[in-house]
Length: 158
Length: 152
Image (cartoon, rainbow over all chains, first blue to last red; front, side, top):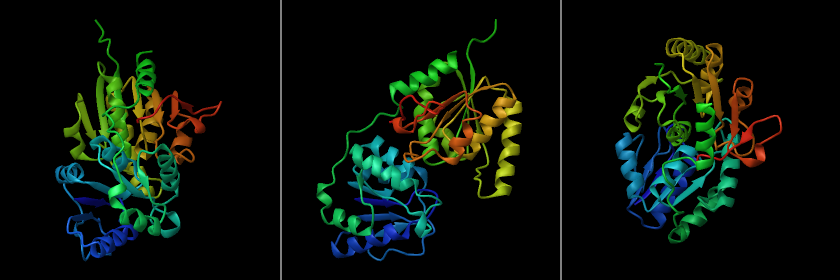
C-alpha cells in the first residue's frame, strides 16, 4: 500500500494531485490519501480527510511507501516504523506554509540520506515512476541521541 | 526528607514538536514528569505523573496567543516546576517565560525542522532559556544556541 499524508495541520493539494494522477496512470489500486480539507478530491486513489490516531499508525505500518510533506512529525514517525518515505516540501510562495523551513529540512535530509526528497512536482512524478527504487533508511529507535539525552539529564540534575 | 527528584514540566505544541518532545523524555526518567501539550489523545502514548492539555497558539492569532498565555501562566503558578523543557513552539516559549518568573530553570530545544535558521520562537527563547539548544551544528554560535546532539 502507498500512503500519502498531508499531516495534521494544512491541506496539500499539489502533492495529492500528483499522487492521484500517478495512481491513475500506473493503474495502482493500493494508494490511500489523507487530505484534510483539501479542495482536490482524488479520483483514482482511496482517500479520507482525517484518520483517527490508531488508523493513521496502522496505515504507516502497512505502507510500502509513505508520501508526505517535509514535516518533522511525519518524517520522524516514518523513520521510527522503518518505512521508506518520500517528501515534497511545502512552499510559502504557494500559500502552503507560512515560511520555507520545509525546503531547508528537505535539503538537509536529502544529504543525510534518511528520506527521499522531491523538490517539486516533476521530481515527485519521476520518483514515483521508479517507485521500486525507493528503499527505507535503517529504522530509528524511539529516543533522541545519547548526546542530547545526556545534555538534558545533566542540566536537570544540576 | 525532601523528595530528591526534580519536578519537570515538559511542554510542546502538536505534530512534530510533540514527536520530538517524546524522544527527549527518556532523559527525565527518575524525575517527577509533568507534561503539557495541545492534543488530548497524546496522553495515552506516554508515562507521566500528570498530563495537562493546553490551548495551541501562534503569533498569527492574537486572541489564541492571549488565551494560551493565560492558561500557561496559571499552569506554571499551579505546578511550580524546578525545570521547564520545551521543543516549541509558541506554547513552549510561553512556558519558558512564565517558568522563569516562577523560578524554574529552563531548556529550549529548537525543532530539528529549523535546519536553515532558528525559528522565531527559538530566537526569542534565547532570552529565557538557561540551556538553549539547536539540533544543527551549523546553527550553533558563540552567543548561543549550543549544539548538543539531536532527537535523531
